[in-house]
Structure formats: C-alpha cells, structure tokens
Image 1 (tube, rainbow, N blue to C red):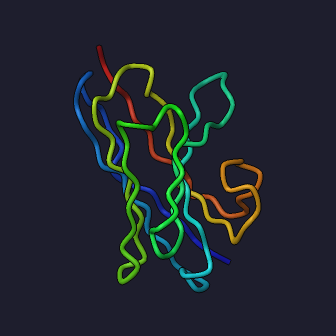
Image 2 (cartoon, helix red, strand yellow):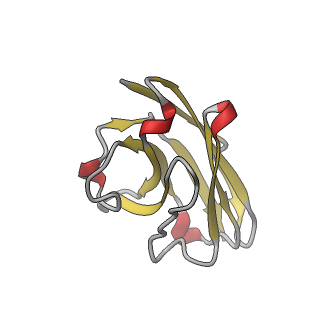
Length: 123
C-alpha cells in the first residue's frame, strides 16, 4: 500500500508557473513509478508524466512536453511537477499516482492515487 498526498496547487495567471509536490508513504518507494495526471470537468483523466525510481525513465504526455518537468527526491519520498508557461487550458485537478508496472502512461495501470490538488489558470 502506498499513500500519496499532493500539494502546491492554486490560482495563477496565464504565463505563470507552479510546482506541484507529491509526498509518498507506506511500502517501499523504490518499487514504484510515480506519475502525474490531471482531469478537467467533463474530460477524461490525462497522463502528463511519470518517473522511474532512478529518474532515468521520464516519459511525458503531449500536453506536458516542453513545459512541465517531473523530478524525484528519493531521500524524501517526494516527486515534483514543475509547470511553466501555464494557460487557462491547464486548469484541472492534478493527481499523483503510483504503479509497480504495466502501461505507465495509462491511468488504469496505477492502483494508488492521491486526493488531487486544484490548479486554476486565469486569463
């Protein structure tokens, strides 16, 4: 069992930046990929990025490429998502999730989820 808690969301103007944090506890952190997803009202949950324990494998979704950066601090059991050049289309609830394997870009491969943090980008 892995327990995840997101933080760092909030209201930001278009063009601004936010850094989201995901704190993990429970079973061995090293066993899991940690991913970031988001969900806007009426839309499906969207893959943004995920990171292996070593940090050497970091695939990104199309919406995140070039603007978002995922990173990991294994000593603190933390994963971060740095988001730059935000626009109103980035408004959503952002979730971190953990998986030991499977198709790491698909939400249904992740059995453990945080409660989410709201990001709102104003125009």
